[in-house]
Each structure stands twice: as C-alpha cells, then as structure tokens.
Length: 420
Image (tube, rainbow, N blue to C red):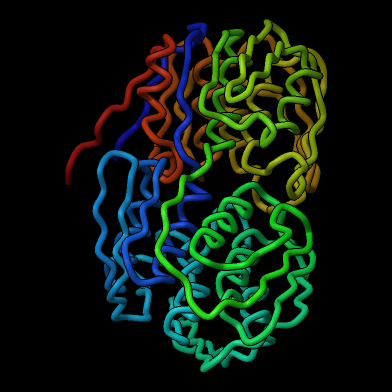
C-alpha cells in the first residue's frame, strides 16, 4: 500500500491551479445519462471517485470518451437500470444515479451504500421524497428498488438540507407531472452547478443556491455542454497549506465567493488574504492566532475543511474550540495529530485545541479523505519526517496533491507500496 513521506519545515511558495470539483463532477456525470446523445463535461478532475462513477455509467450502457479534463458521455443507449454493489460500496455518491435513472427509465436499482468512516449518511430523505412523488420504493437484499411510471410533483420539505438528496430529487423532478418545490434544500455551489447543467439540457429550475428550489416539469431533455466549477475544498486545503507553513501561495482558477467562511477564519487567525476575480493570494504568518470554528451547512464553515483548519490550530497561539455539527465521527484525525505532538481534547462534538510550539514528524494513518489532507498539512509544518499511511483516501478527492505540493517547494513524495 502506498504511503506519503514528508520532510517538514519547508515554506511553500508559488502558484497553484485548482482542479474541477469532485462534488460537482459526480452529479454532473450522473445527470449526463438523463438525455440521449453526447454530453460534454469539461474541467473534470482525475480522481478515484470520478473513475468509479465512469465505470458505473459504462455498466448502465453509456459510452465515455475522455481527453484530458473533458468527458464526452454518449447516453444514447442506456440498457441497464442497476448499479451493482461491487462499485457502489467504494463510493457513497453512487446513490446519485437514483434520480437520473428514475427520470430516464422510470426505474432504478442501486445497492445500498456501505458504511462511512466519518459517520452515518442515511439516504432515507431521498427515498421519502421519491415515495411522496409517487414512486414505489422497496429495500430488499441490500438493494434499493424504485419504480415509477410517472412521478408527481408537489411540495417536499427535507428533514435536513442534504446535498445529494437535493440533487437526486432535483434530477428526478425535471420530468414529473407537476411543479416540484424543494423546501429546506441544500444551498452549496455544487447544487447551483448541477441546476445550471440541467437547465442547459432543457430543464426549468429556479432557486438553486437558496433553501427553496422550484422545478417546473418539461417533457424531454437534450444533451449539452457544461463546465464543472473549481473545487473549493481543494482550494481551501492549499490556503491552509500556505498558512501552516507561513508560505505564500497564489491559488488560481477558484471562485473566492465559495470560500468566504474559510477566508474569514484565516483572516481572524492573522493570515493575509488578497482576493481577485478568480484567484486568492494567501500569505501565512508564524504563530497564527487561535480561532474557534463550528461547521455548518453552506454558507457556513464546511465540514470538509474542518480537519485542515484543526491542523493549523495545532500551531496557533492560544486555545481554539472546533465544533463539528455535521458528522458525528469526524474527529478520527485527532488521535493521529496527537501522535505528532498536538494538544487536543475531545468533549462530545467539540475539540479543544491548545497550540504548541512544534509538531514532530511521526508515522500516522489516514482514516478518511479530509483527515488525510490534515495529516499531510501537519507533516509539512512538523519537525522531521512524517509518514502518512493508507493514502488511497486522498486519491478519492485530490488530483495530484503530491505533485502540486512539490511544485511549491514541499519535500514530499509518494512511495509505492509493495505488490502482493
């Protein structure tokens, strides 16, 4: 199994180009099967989750041609409505195929996704909405089986503003019998990006980016061309890298408005931030100030940047409180940071972080995608050598993270594991 080895202490400086957003690419790929013809998607990141979704689409009958960051998805002949467990178990976002398959074929069979290291991610909100729209929903033998000759619109009030739930319902509703209103909808930029794509395909969706989305029914959809937005989480990770190494990084191909909550917290910590149209200049300082954060649904502080900010707070001047409100088990990186010399105490859903003078290079184990990133950041700032194990988590959501870090002066390399 591969590992990442970091010799800490290097100050990162340079310019980095942010890839397309994984969390926008996945629903866009799923939506591509909703209309016959060839849909072209650009700015698709080369990450494992995208490769899994591509394989799922291929099994459904789509033909995919990729040239650099452009995917051409030919969905003229979707022959299957089933997403098998052997692929779904590797990526929970596979449930995003439920809405498109219902819209295109009137039926969908998707394996229940496996467990999640960072906590429970129930899909009951998706299924409750489909049922209210007139679909027959059955769970048996680990499969979700949904059928609907015709979906009926209506007012759907979500128990929680789930991102994938909002996306799934939005896709299923485009050809329903009546207008669909989604209340308490998720407001993330990835929702807006998907709505823009669906509208380019002929849908009529209003309100994306607010907590009330209205989907007016249309009779048919057509293939389209669509560009994926930049990855705000990758951009935030590199902003944290500049801050934790007291470096200076120009982050390009980014939408600064998507990172307002993080930039505000970095500013409070004493990090210098300069924002331009599509780029952010981040200048770190030695001994940043301690700052509290509490994760929240967008536009609040993103849970996907909690672990990275915690790594920075490990070296801050003072005590910070980091409260996780989205997932119940997203502090697994804490034990690994403590191995590196961090002073952290967990109290329920809060982590009290007392800044220390130095972190020490250690052997640590990644437990999930964003925890992996936090350990890499800690290793960049630590004294000595850090070995990060189980780095396959990083492959799910970061495109060439090691290469990008190397380009800015980090002493970091990926060591291939031994083949069995």
